[in-house]
Amino acid sequence: MLLFLLFGIYLPLFGQGVADTSFRQKAIENLIGLYRTSIGLQAGLYNGPLYEPYTRQFVSGHQFFNIDSSTKGSVTYDGLGYYNIPMRYDIVRDELIIRHPNGFPVNLIKQKLDSFTLFDEHFVKIENIKGAGGLDSIGYYHQLYSSPSISFLARRRKFMQEVTGRTSIETTIYSRDFYYILKDGNYYPIKNKKALLEILKDKKSETQQYIKRNRLRFKQFEEDVLETVSYYDQLN
Image (cartoon, rainbow, N blue to C red; front, side):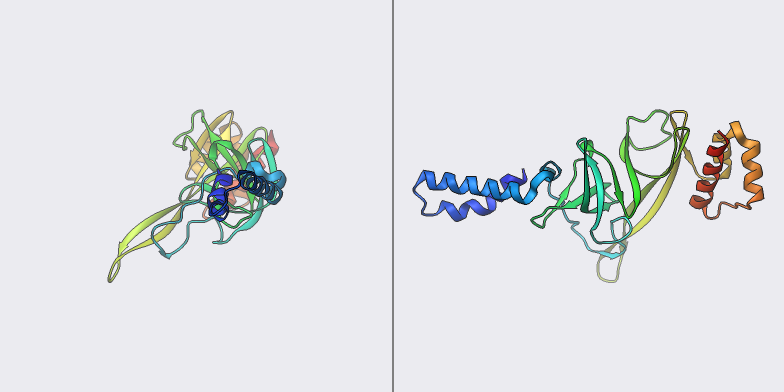
């Protein structure tokens, strides 16, 4: 698809006043060669649709994970690993965006993407979930802890909110995180310590003692859950 876009840009240069078919064919072959050289072994990565910009400017916040600029990361896409790829994760739309070597942004196809790492944080695509407890049918989840027996994941979300300004409608961005435990093949949503201990009930006594001993108040919810899950995993 992107190759066709390049044709659309460059072929008019050859289409005016070119009567010789062989010359035109040669120009096309040269263009294909140039495209393949510029893309190289990463050609399979740049086959998604163009990333569409938002129609409104945000008066506060932005739609991306961490910072509003491309950062090099890695991605497993269509069964292959790609590294040092400039990318951004649009949390509002749940889309991973990469920059084509020719400069324009490309939205990777979610069905082909397995996982990606950005800012040293690992995200996995989850779909066809068993006992999901409200998880989306397909989406990217921040893998905070992972082992064969238990995993701790966060769903990073951002939302657009429209408010009435002095002269117009203004759009702001706000964020929310949703947390899940993967255990025994099921995903469980967790919002507090009680829900976490219910999931870890096979080692509830030891886990409660650890929480009390280390004075975990779960006011820093993500950090305290991570510490608790890590300890629980060592008991198995």
